[in-house]
Length: 110
Length: 114
Image: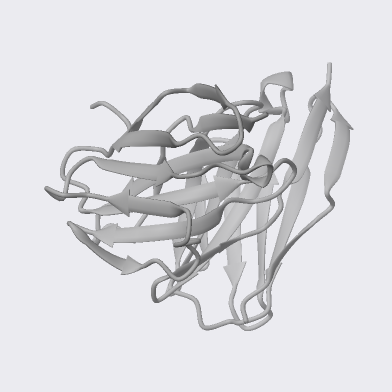
């Protein structure tokens, strides 16, 4: 059974710092991995999607990497801003199953 | 382009009452998902539609939950009767195969059962 773990559960960093969020999964046979952002009381916003044949994706200050063999993905946020404060979730998909982690609550200190 | 639309945004009902949620996916997206999200947890899939066919409803509590997507476009999720433990956020998402199956989410419906 696929399990997705996100560490840490919560993180506070000063504005301007670079940071890394981690996602690990137990079954490496995945179709894709997607990173989302969720603001309080809101739905999920797709940030980056990495297909199984890819190693990384970049969008602006965000970079996501995927290492299927080790069952890990990281989301790198450069030059963090207070507006980056949110919960970040990763989700892995295989066949018709989509499994989410519990998320990392990120707080950027002004 | 409009995103995934859900209504209502909030719903408060008493236990044992029925409730229904509506979702309109992004135009052209033939895959539609309903998720349940409890506080502090990631979303959990309830049901997935490919056009009008429910292809994965293994996590849907069928004794009280039902869903339909009659014309393969918008969808309704119903709970009857609602229980206290059903209080959660119900999220709808859609995707289009061929672009990595990237999912796009609606804002969700926050259900409170009293």
